Image 1: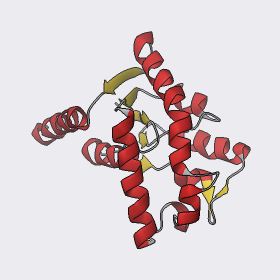
Image 2: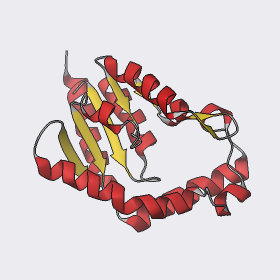
Image 3: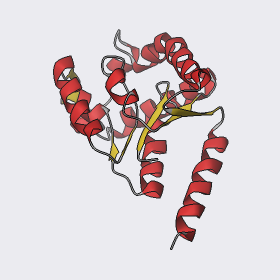
Length: 178
């Protein structure tokens, strides 16, 4: 388990899960939003995104906290494991809303110094709107990977406590190793 993709819908907790996995497995974590957004929420051109992701996945040890469809192929073909966060829509939406409201209130910078605004929350490019539109597609993709029984291996977690128990088990095993 050296090349891990944490995949799920917007707001499912991919970044937090990836950070925890990276700590437990002793692997570097790449937060993909850092490679896909310039300051001012300007999207990095697709060819630049693909080149950056290709460099990341060329290595042997890493955890990624997501994959956009424009370069998903690069990540999946080099993954050993997909950790799928297949949580109910209400849960991921609730998490996303809570996180976004906190980021608006605190103006805490996220990727590359970007901050969330009220205007973004309700505008055409709203992350909440993106969640609603992308949820079915991402869920179908994740479940299709799991049913394919191929490579990479896919572990689906339907509830956060299932993921927490799995990570705790990995952490326990890692501590027992000499």
